[in-house]
Image (cartoon, rainbow, N blue to C red; front, side, top):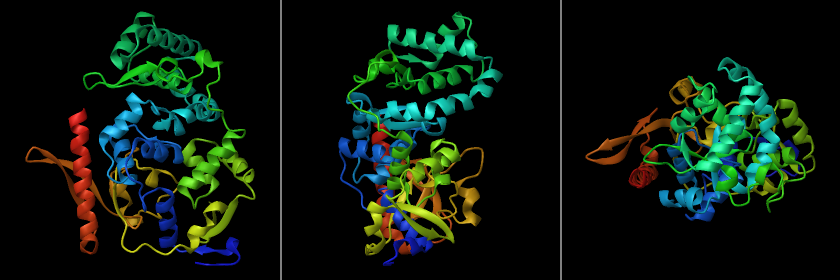
Length: 382
């Protein structure tokens, strides 16, 4: 793939997939530690976490020998990660030190984008303001509360809670930096005041913590996105982040001089210039096989996913309705789906390959055993 004029480099599909596997930390995986967990989240600017177990499994796929306890330690004991609403207004695990600037960049647009749905739920601007202020007061006064407990307190104040009103109001408070998810209580999710949960969270929105935001948050988001997802385009960044396409393109332009333009499927795409050496790296010695969970960043991080999922198998991986199934990846291409299963009292994995996978049997067996091990650890912690 060597080329003296790097801007003319044409990437074949398999080369682009390998570059993305490397960027996604799915090729060479670091050894397990709490620090590796935080780094994996920070370098990908979050891991989607609407399903908490799926987020943990996404980290397992990227960290060799990861134990479920290390993720829990980063979330609860050391509080280096936060589960809250962030990119695209969707629940993510986010590095605690990045949360303030990410919300400052993304939340205003996401909050505006949710106004219509809140109105449908009876939450006009004034009612929403009263609800968020009430959430702030009750969580700081009482500590951890479940959704049901929050709904009861809001209803007593005359604030709508029917249907999805409660969780939309909680999500709005999350985007405003008022709350985040706390530890489960008897298997039920709780919410906590961010200013109580994170030692360095700005108090009352005006005291800065020790982590300084980047000078250009949108450009920093674009830089980190390319580091963790390239080769990619500004349109990919917009889809993944929740920025408007124009905002993503403007951030891209501000990185001019730090980008390497390539061609992928006849269209331009970009890498960070710092990653150009990867274009000449030797191919891996053997196939890269990973079991990634539903909503994995490798599949969610782009406007289109046909580079990773052949069109004839797209419905098996993404049947619609916002669902994205766990996938068997072989060299970055979806080769089937998988799901947890219970057999003889223990958690196991059921594979549903699209075609025979005999050529990668040893690597696939190792992945299955490791996922089953991690699932059992997670079950015991629950």
